[in-house]
Amino acid sequence: MASLTIFVLAVFVGFEIITKVPPTLHTPLMSGSNAISGISIVGALLATALGANGFASLLGFLAIILATVNVVGGYMVTNRMLSMFKAKR
Image (cartoon, rainbow, N blue to C red):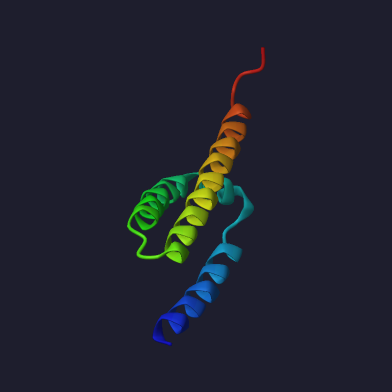
């Protein structure tokens, strides 16, 4: 029950923090979070490999897929943002 309470409080705090970030800072901050998603991929790989049962392995596999989508999407957004600053030819 304590873990669920901490999770719910973290969701509320995270939502409040994200909504207070100005749009001009949102993209660079999102790009910086790709490193955290990379760490999530490593943790998901470990959870999948060391899963005690099929459900743990399934959750680990799902985490791998979602974290990979997050990393690829963040890279695409960063690449698009950086291309806005390149000189036009």
